Image 1 (cartoon, rainbow, N blue to C red):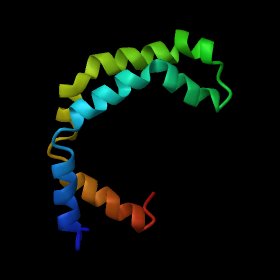
Image 2 (cartoon, rainbow, N blue to C red; image 1 turned 60 degrees about the vertical axis):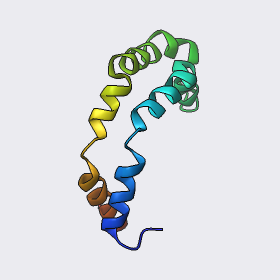
Image 3 (tube, helix red, strand yellow; image 1 turned 135 degrees about the vertical axis):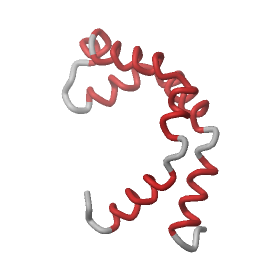
Length: 92
């Protein structure tokens, strides 16, 4: 367990070093149907979702890919730490 925010940030950085491939695998396995199932809980018709929002979601996932996701989170340990702390301070 991290003893301070710096150690927590370092742990987050270590854990996210290979997050891109894990993210890609997870979203590929879940697919747009899982996305639309979640939206169905909000009252959105799953069939309609698959034709619009689900298709757009899948296109976005395909466009980003594992490397894009990894690039988006790399080097953001300090941002993670600030947001983590802000969440405990009632900043959200």
